Length: 95
Image (cartoon, rainbow, N blue to C red; front, side):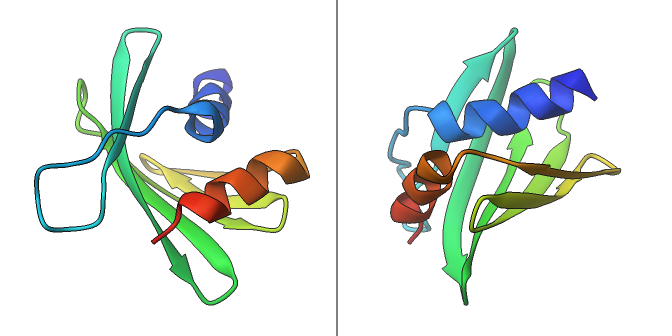
């Protein structure tokens, strides 16, 4: 569970890098030796963060609405609050 929360928290502090593909820009970061690649998109009043862990192939999808985050990482359901400033920063990077 701690690793899951660290993953999600790191998503809000990650530095983005553009992808070479014509799809939505991909963002990437590395934490504790694991490299995460993800995209963000705006769907109604939520920001959807979808991605995978390159080292393991595990996937995740998180929905940010206000300061509440819900979703799945691997087969595990997650839900937690983030500071409002972090939630706004994530929403501003969505396509």
